[in-house]
Length: 140
Image (tube, rainbow, N blue to C red; front, side):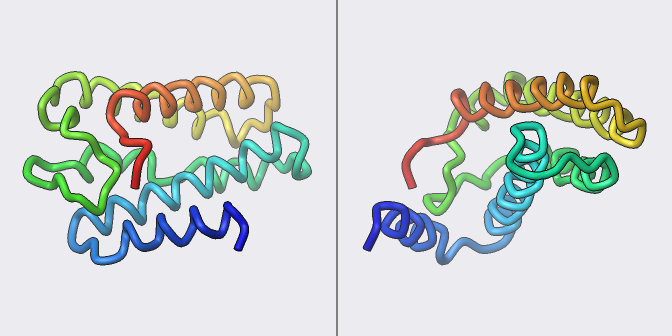
């Protein structure tokens, strides 16, 4: 078994048993990751650039992230760190920054301006990475 297969199996086991808002949150994050990867592949030259596809992918779950972390939804199945609920103002600020950046990206996507989209996408990537550094466990 390859390392990737072992890690994927471990992640599947870690998420097994999640229910309710935690399961919904985990599914939304996976969907968002898949959509952002598809866009990143286009900008990275791993897939043909298609402005219409970028516009479709831009309507991901990013706008829903803030509501997926209500108080009391910490769970061992999730990678969410307690810092989300311990520092709710900082977390909400990060979620608002993501919302603003994705709104800008979604508004830019139909224009098909590759350079503007790439810059907007880079901003989303930075926001996601920053949030993950502060509020997401690398384990699980």
